[in-house]
Length: 382
Image 1 (cartoon, rainbow, N blue to C red):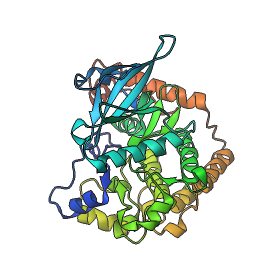
Image 2 (tube, rainbow, N blue to C red):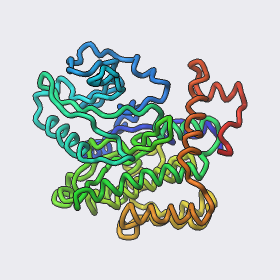
Image 3 (cartoon, one colour):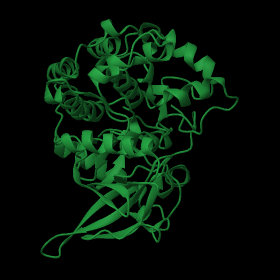
């Protein structure tokens, strides 16, 4: 596999789109921006992101020390901060707040509050945790834990740049943790929520090997999506399920499973599932007509149990996919056990630390530049 292959492809961050924005993308000439977006809860370069950006306009919040701007989107901005405990011990955290020019817009206020309410309810080891929710100078804010590490998109880009693939047991480890988070999300409170934005960039990986699902900005209850299917489309284009692009069904547990299936495939192969070069109408057709059987015939040979997992999670029709994240998880566990793969936290943490150490040892050079200089084979057998 060539590390130069599809440089804008695998692991590339995309903007999260609502249905209206998606329709605009289908009719527009250039489509939405696919520029990488910094994730608010993660550091992938030894914390240097906290040195970027201007936080001078950010309101002072009692008990928090703002270090710097991490990034911003259409509704909110994200800052690195320190939370000062009662004993004066600082704890790293992230503060997400609604943009100052959106404070007086009820629609943005409601969307931000919806995210805060849903995210605050979710307490699970594999979900990014909410520490505080409040309002300062009329601006809503959400305080979340800081993840010192990288996201799965970073992991993919690192592997691609080094012309290697992510070891299968580490792919399965990531998948298992995300499925546990997704099962909790889908079943919370008896009715559950649909995440609607599963992608590599929303899977955060700490330096210690913890895997956490992030970003509930477009999550909605399954009941509300079924009541208003016309407004249910949101997320990233290349992770949409076929029924979403055709409008035949609302976002659901099964569309989340499909999006995670796309992520699983990209982690396995270090290649994007759907073309990043096609125009939006052509991409819509590609997703609509997608058949995972064609994929397995053309792309590569996998162990039969993994092929069966791929066929289930990426089935074109929702009814042919896994009925739940738990059913998906059981198949992953069964394959790992029967194959003798030990999905140990310590092994994955070691792989993550070595990947991060390598990324941070190049004196500002890109991974591709360092690869050309060192001809390293790191990571191939871990």
